[in-house]
Structures are given as C-alpha cells and as structure tokens.
Length: 431
Image (tube, rainbow, N blue to C red; front, side, top):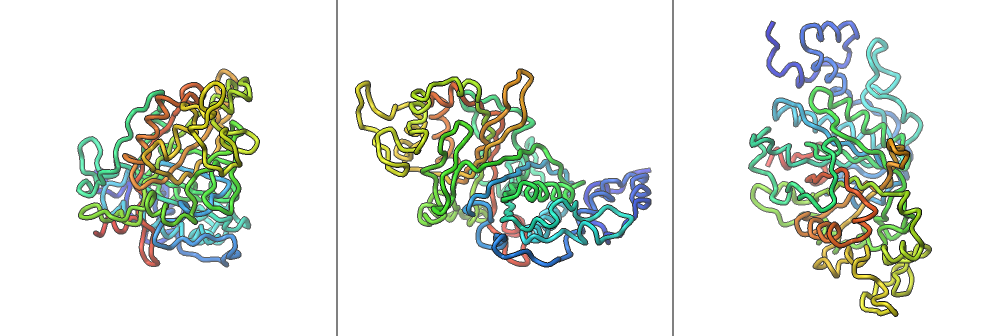
C-alpha cells in the first residue's frame, strides 16, 4: 500500500483525543509520524493560573527574550534537524512552538496539561515542571544555514532570503569539532533559574516537533559565565576566574544596538531587522592540567587576578586594563594573555553579548572531567565580531592553545521577537 503524500511526518491532528489503540492503528497503516507528532502539535491550548509575575519574563516584544534578559543560572540548549517535507509543515511547527513557549514562559502547562487530558492518551504536558513556576524561563529560537540551503537544495523556498552574515564558521586552529555536537537547522535555547524548568521546556518542544524535527544535539549548562545586567555580579568559570567582566549589559542600550541587534538589513534580508546572530561553541577545558598550574601562571594567562578579577595593571575589577604598563620583565598584562587578545581595543572596537554556561558531562574514558564552557554570544555580524577575535585567540592566546579544545560549533540567525497573534520567524516566511 502506498504511503499517502506527507502524511507520515507532517499532518496536524484534528483533535487531541486519539486513543492508544487508535495510535497503533494509524501506525499500522504507515502513519506513526502522523499519530505521534499530532499529539504534540495540537497540544498548546489550555491555560492554568499564571504564576507570580516576578518569576515571568515577557515572551512578546520587538526582540526575543533570552538575549539581553538578565542571565539565568541554568540552561538547556538543543539543535534540531528539520524533517518536515513542506514549507507549510515547517511553519506549522514554528506556530506550535510559539504557542507552547508563550504558555511555558508564563508558568502554564501545555495543552490540557499533565493530568487533565484524555485518560487513555499520553498527557499533553510531561509534568515535571508542575508547581515549579515560570522561574524566569526564556526560550530563544534561531535558524541554521542548512534550513535555507542544504547540499545545494533550496529546502523550503528560503534560499533567496539566506543572510550573507549566516556563514559557515571557518575552521579555527585547534578546533576538534564533533559532527554530533555541531550545526543544526533550528536552535532552541531555554534558560531558567530552575534546571528542571529549562529541561521541561526543551523536552516538550521536542515532543511537539516529533515527525517534523528531531534533536541533533543538546547541552545542559549551569552557573552562568557572564552577567548581562549591571545588577548582576560577575560569575566565575570552571577555572575559578571571574568571566565576562567586560561583557555588554542590557543597560548599555547604544552599544547593544550597535553590536547585537540587526537594524539596517534591506531587500531579501530585511526580515532579520530586530534579530541577531547566535554563536554557540562547546569548549572543553583541560581541568586537570589547569589544576596543576601555578597561581602566577594562571593569572598571567588570564591577565587578571583570580581573587578580584582586576587587571594585572592594577585597580579593581572594572578598571580599564593598561596594556602599556611595564613591569620588570615586560608588560604587566602579557600581549598573549586572554584579556589582551579579547579586548575590544585589539579587535577594532567590536563587542559581543555573551550568555555562556559551565557544563560537566561526567568523565571520559581516561578518568578526566569532560567539563568546560558552553560559549554563547549574540552579535550583529559574526564576520566582523566573532570570526576575527576567535581567529586571533586560536592562534595567539596561550590559554586557548594549551588549556581549551572546541568540540562543538554553530551559528544561527535569531529572528526578531513575536507580536501577540504572530509566530516565530513570521518576518521570514511572510515577507
């Protein structure tokens, strides 16, 4: 029996009330994608009482939340490969995600919830976030280059709107990228103050996507490694140093507008105005080697003190480094130190808004911690803001050369925010 066109993966259900018997009946006819995908697709309607406003981050706005939003403490990020066979199916996925994210960020359950639906069908919501509240959840969605064009094919009629800035990141010196940790057609970054809330969001979006997109890779992070507001203290990375002292902050509106938000795109790329580009890099730290390194060498490699985070040229954490100040053996801040190579003065003045997180994935087969930094940065153009800086660091930063290894990589176009009644990526598909 021939399989009906597109039925296996894409069609939406007419109602949620499909029984388990009915599900397997459809599967027997070659339609398991239809049946299982359907449960997630149509499951974004029910509303329960909203949680206290103090834990809620607005979902709607000119820009997506989770970028300049005060960095939360936990993250679950996942990249997806889109399997939808039609443009309409892809759009339906984004609409379903939009509705689900709007509910999740309000602290509501998805669809008929975890306990109130059809007793003979899987619940619409997995339920592990019940009673936890919104927990400042933000969900940020972006598009990979392969969503527009893959293997020379225009997959969804989007190739003509591929932004020039959405490049394939070059191979940097020292990269040891793993295919299973890199790339993706879609990216979903969920951040919250409670790890279970972030995991719940990604898990349920993956359920909704079933039959139209599948998880390519994911990463759980903890302990933000930068602050995105002047109200937040500077956190520490797994090397024990304060990280992100000079990061862009939401209060620096002029700098954020200059270095983060796309505002002057025209023609086929105009859909990106109000959006930004996300760089995602999984950076493994050689923890055991670092732990055997003297304090003098650690501070010399970073260019800052470990206790206060002050530049080695003197002052406090937020004192501007003096790269010309000389010591007995040369500049107090070495020219190949991390702070020197990454400083805007040495990168044509460009800045980034970073939202990285620490991660640990247990130990490898040699008993060493598989741990490090999941680097996330939002920039107006990776060609001018990330690639030159990372190229310099990969070549000259001793810290990068001896103590870090990049194992995952991706660049994603993050469309502007959503208006009430709209959906994620609407400017792309309807412009």
